[in-house]
Image (cartoon, rainbow, N blue to C red; front, side):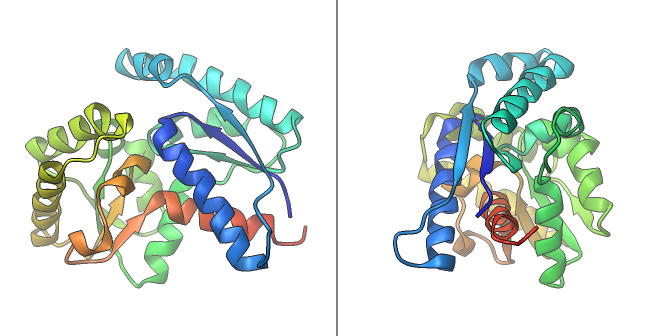
Length: 231
């Protein structure tokens, strides 16, 4: 099995999910006491969040590029950037290393297309929903991407940063997300992309009338498949 490098800590709540999923999926594939070969570089999310808020993306990208280089030096043979939002700097990170960076939006789009879905609603941080780095990447795979209205975007973003990143899961927030999902479905969404790794702590398949695409799990599944594939 190839060694998977994880750039995590954004937030550590979802990075813990990555670690759990990688090990569970490896055990399912190989059986017995098998677990994933991986190395983790966990950043201080407060530093990254401040740079996000100040639109200092190049500086944030440099921090993550240094993390990527450290992981490669530690033996990582493929890398995961364990956050949807920071895929805004994925090209900067990928260009700093000589091993593959498995892009989260690509693995998600592949799963959406495999289900025969073409129009999706996207939930995530305001950066992910409103900027083109993620929506455009999904669209490049032939997907039509819808985002919530302004009030819905504000709610989704607030819950991520003020609750989910702190490990807080509230039933009223789940209800608010359900309402946003229902609006997206009414607008024509055939599936819902959970485009923030923390959202999977809140939203389950039964919370949506259409298929949900949990990007953390899909990313982990793709990584394990790649890690177990011969060169």
